[in-house]
Image 1: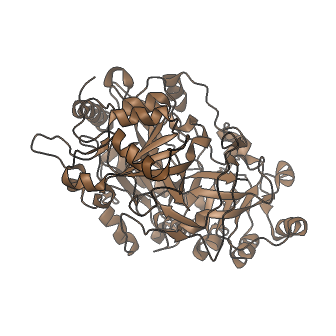
Image 2 (image 1 turned 180 degrees about the horizontal axis):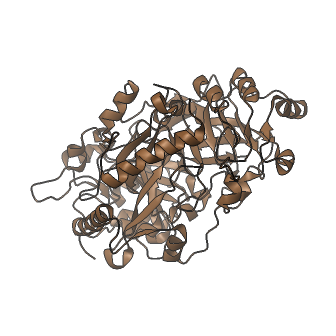
Image 3 (image 1 turned 135 degrees about the horizontal axis):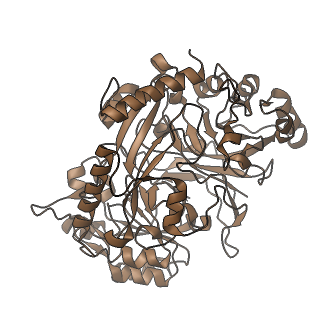
Length: 287
Length: 287
């Protein structure tokens, strides 16, 4: 597989050709065409009542934390990706209403990576079982080491430190890495942290920790940075451990430094457009 | 104010000019420009812990209903609006990953109408207090009369019928109108139901019922159709009752015929892009 930067550049080039010339090798596709890409049956309306899990009862709560950044044309994007473009279609004066036409890469803002993002014929976000979106929240804090080393990773040792204090990571948990990066989104250069060789420097999950979390049966993994893998990764090793196991990712989480390391739960408002490799998501922690 | 169809046509025309020529009277704007439209201070990260309400405790639950349609290029849109365009930027073979570039009108799929959609300088979706997104669910069923009359409206009498059976509509409730239209999205012609004069025919809220619900202090109002107002509305009277009162709308809800009329709660994963007049939302009912 190519390096992430080469891959992004190829994608960007295809995108530009397509957008500017209104055609090209990869054209706009209908929902039918997208479905064909995945060879999966899709219904426009999903099933009805879904039990959250094997007798799992989501606890009552009285406080909500918003783990979602406000995002738009100025929000930092992975190196090589294209920033969103928002166009105002109408305004209250004179049209009577205001609305926009949105154009963006699915992997923008606080967003989901579905298994299908890296797995051919993998589960797309619209098809993920909704019980994965209601989960105990585990926050692994590596902000101290990340302050010294922007390439820091969440490791098996970091998981052990958390477990020594709070007990075993529960099956079905959503496990988020708090690196301190959530406070940097207003400064895209600091958030992406590119060096002179165009290598990104931000924290992410180590593949061994990803493998350990997959073995524990977690439902999802989060980061407050632009990628599940740390910036200099050339092989997407964390992505390629989580996603093939059916564990979705959430990148670009906000406010992880405000929620307790243990005891809260998350509710993931994931995207539901057809054949979604991922997309902007509304993520809440509740307590 | 112009009729909805004229307004949509103006918007569509502006949009086309803009998209085809890459410029025009209303250009793509940065987040800074968008913020200026609304003269409201915005932070890229919202505040921290938010109590849901005055001592309101969201109850525990073990079952989730997905009230969100899968949506895409083939999903029905309000007459005159432009359908989404999804472009594949890369695929797992040969790029190593799959993702799309999404282009769509904010008011597509199961989506929010924020107050700012119809109110100059009104609250946009990114700024709505998140406690409005956690609410008791009230479902008003007008599917029997809507089966006979596609222009049926949810009326003050329909609210009284519900209250006679279940008691007072709670302050802070999310009140959804089940017209049976949620089952029609796979057939856009039936969902929008245009007549020979290009007038739409589908159910919606009567303005008097909207005023009554505003007086009860509800947080949000929903429909399973393309608009809070019924299809033939020429004045957006329901929109213009709910939205100026700070009551958000959700249009295009799914599965309202599967949830109990009373006793469930909703969790609204609203959009959080900057200056959002609304946008695709993930909506769950829980029990």
